[in-house]
Image 1: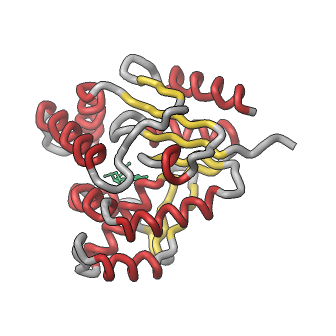
Image 2 (image 1 turned 90 degrees about the horizontal axis):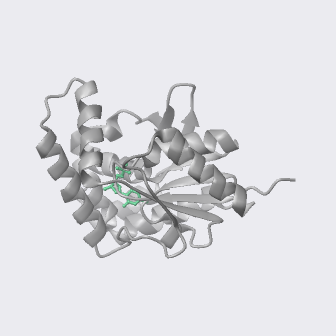
Length: 223
Ligand code: DC
């Protein structure tokens, strides 16, 4: 029987992790776990319940009572929190702003890491996030660190927002991406760092297929 590997994809926002993680999982017949969506879900529920990002006890209880499920459909992967579909709501600018603050709390990270390990333990998974190869699964069979220049990531985000009909400014979007990099890299708990044994792919001048080909090659070598 073919080995069912644990594959980690880490990197800053806008590097193409979500797209590549989904494509790689599909190609391999693996489950795709978007760990950012899990932190976003905690932030959304905290917001709804008026639990502040500083309220450790409140967040701990929220996480203890939380069941997150991923349900793939032909169009999108649905994120279900305690039985309710939160897929769209976890992507609002308000939740995007609150998520790094909630994700910086060790009580939240501990709960999510535990959940991620439970989901991924049997293998046959691609996990996408910031700390998968360093904290969640340091012994993952293959680790990718996907990056791209800040200008390119800002441009991609700008085009994404434009396509959604939003009124955005390119330079401001690039500045926002830069600010999020700083917040993600400089936080005290589980900051975004590259695992020493990660396969580093810079996607600035690569197509999605180009990155996917590199990834499949590395996975093939690990089997
Ligand atoms: O990948 P994303 O933009 O959906 O992530 C949302 C936020 O969650 C972002 O601020 C980084 C944080 N995050 C994290 O701290 N650890 C992870 N494993 C994944 C995301």
